[in-house]
Image (spheres, rainbow, N blue to C red):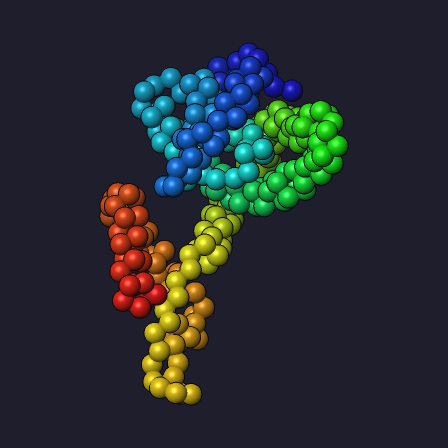
Length: 275
């Protein structure tokens, strides 16, 4: 059970704090952007927790910056991650030896797998069931059609979103105590980092598509440049494009500048037949 008073001067998150996170979680797609997607809304949802835990301007600024990194998942289940992060922020505020990098690593490692589950259930299953029931009644002129559609889809969603906030918090606190007692924090950080890199790698391979149709040779002996690259390492051009963009970001080149550069490069490459 969550404590509502401080024991031994420890900072504690209350049900009221988690309730604020729940209500703020509905804005997940309001400030969606191409550079970091849901990061602004995620940070906004965490602000009540951060204000409770960090009193100095410097600590608050560091915490806010920590939650402005890239984030994207199914909005319906985001409170589970928010709850876990809230528990980790609480631990960080009370333990000077806490490894703060685990906060972002856990968030990064969870957002991909949970998005797969959330998209499959809420978008791929529940929405279709609600649409089927609602449409069949609406086609008969029954006013219950749109009403049932809204209820069937939103009741499970709202219940999960509400309770997942406290589930995530309880899971986070209990989970952290166990792994700290067992000395597993280092292994967890490494594992979370690996999963995060796997998610990024999967996104790179599936979302970046570069194809070079230029041919070398003539007749039956002609081979495409793309096939040569694929024989070396499949999707190597996608990896190269990701590496180039990552390098530019590390050099603090603005994301908008990179996007415009990629657009110009793609258009020119298409016009001269490279792509």
